[in-house]
Amino acid sequence: MENKYNLKSPAVKRLMKEAAELREPTEHYHAQPLEENLFEWHFSVRGPPDSDFDGGVYHGRIVLPPEYPMKPPSIILLTPNGRFEVGKKICLSISGHHPETWQPSWSIRTALIAIIGFMPTKGEGAIGSLDYTPEERKALAKKSQDFFCESCSCCMRSALLALTPNSNPSAEDHKAKELAQQINFKAESSLSRQSSESSGAASEPSTHTLGDSSTASGQEDADRPQAEQAEPPSVSRAEQPPAAPTERPLSPRQRRAQRRGEQPPREPAANRAAFVPANRQHQDESHAGSAALILVLTLALAVLIFRRIYLAQEYKFDYDF
Image 1 (cartoon, rainbow, N blue to C red):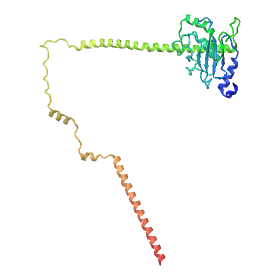
Image 2: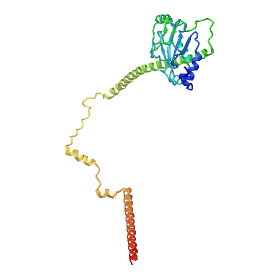
Image 3: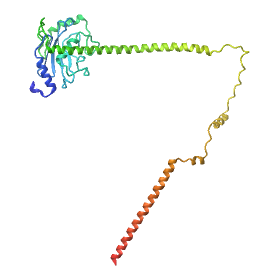
Image 4: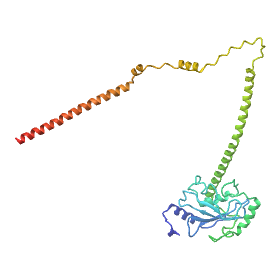
């Protein structure tokens, strides 16, 4: 495999190193690349204890991009488990669906431990997630022991080491577990943020309706005293003042005369011509100066031409003599 890839590539160096670190299976996980493709790994993880997946061993694929570890891998489960869909890229904060949360310091070991930590959590409608009942998940956990992968020839009964009560995790496992807990915390915080945003958006219409109803009731209360004030007290007919005589409507001719009287008088043309803008006068003066300059230059050029002709003829006369 070393002869097939460029050993100077950062991705190849990183994957070679991780393949050497994960060569031996552990009690909880194991992962190795395929013989023909360094960028496709097959993994096996044990279900977390004291959960619906206890006793199950689950197999899957990890497809790594050429830019690894700068870009996250894609994770696909191959064993039916009731938490993730089979044969579909799952949506986690460590998978290719969320490149914004991926960190280059995370590794395949970190991803495996994070998958184990994610299994007991709720799907919440994420891509590739399932929410089976506990009974169905326990039944699938028992059946997972019989799964056999034809691509890597791996059987789940012998994929991992047997559990022992005196097993001590390595330092790498402790470090990966700490990183996986951070990943789980980030996922939970993002889910809580989404739920709070959705609840806030749902509460906005109710507040609007309450505000509208309160304003409408306030307007009604404010209109009532105005209406009461607008109603004049009842006055007897004897005390009522005589009605003012109504004005007769104006005729069209009177309206036109009234409009003409309201319009300001127009200034005579002589007065308008007297107020010439100052910039126009400056423009006229500059045009006159440029015309005089052109005329002087033309006369000077004509004098030079006539003098040249005169000198040429005088020189020709002397030569003939």
